[in-house]
Amino acid sequence: MFEGAIVATVTPFKNGKVHYPSLKKLIERQISSGTDGIVPCGTTGESATLSYEEHKKVIEFTVKTVKGRVPVIAGTGSNNTEEALMLTKHAKKVGADGALVITPYYNKPTQEGLYQHFKKIAETVDIPIIVYNVPSRTGVNILPETVVRLSKIDNIVGIKEASGNLNQVCEIIRRTPSSFSVLSGDDFLTYPMLCVGGRGVISVASNVVPDQMAAMYDAFVSGDVKTAQKIHYRLMPLFRALFLETNPIPAKTALGLMGVIEPELRLPLTEMSPAPKKELTRVLRALKLL
Image (cartoon, rainbow, N blue to C red; front, side, top):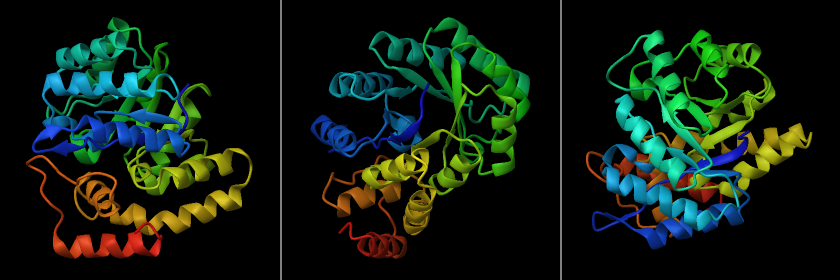
């Protein structure tokens, strides 16, 4: 259902508040660059520091701005199942096309707990759901066996896989229906995952180079694998640079250096340190983005 170069958008701030003119600018930039979908309020959108009111408003604003031109997959996860339900219900109400739901963090649920968490959300809210697996952030890894069980629930339509484990990715693709979308959650694994049957990426790098991420995906699916591979290797230094510090610090810093938005962050995230920022700047210049 969901595939392609999908962006996990940053949330722009100004003087501590969400800056909606900048968010509109980001959305329009993505759509004009060929991005296949937009994810507001994910990890890259600093969802953990948004109030419920802000979270809901960002999703509603994104849906209204996009106007159906590409799918909007709202980040609605929480480590509290009832909170995740509340946010997912709101996303459905305001017209989001899908929900990206992270595995509960901090609680460290068992595999059965993970299954029951997603099952309850899917059975309660009639919206397509993408499971989001990012063990480095959450402290828990959803195993292929659990993903297979979840893939049998009609409106659980895919997974954003950010475990960094290509073997796990292959197991999920091998054991789930062909209609189940396995999306990369790591930019550097997008091309390898496409090669083993992945359907695209929910990308941090697309904030910075939306046209090039879209071009890589489009080249691959059109059969021009060599061009896709060439773009992948050209962007590898950027993929590394965007994780020199905690995401989305480098992504927002890059957008600030490029003059797209103000690179304001919310505590506990802070301004990028001088040495990593210097390396990020070098990479952006090498790619002719500055």
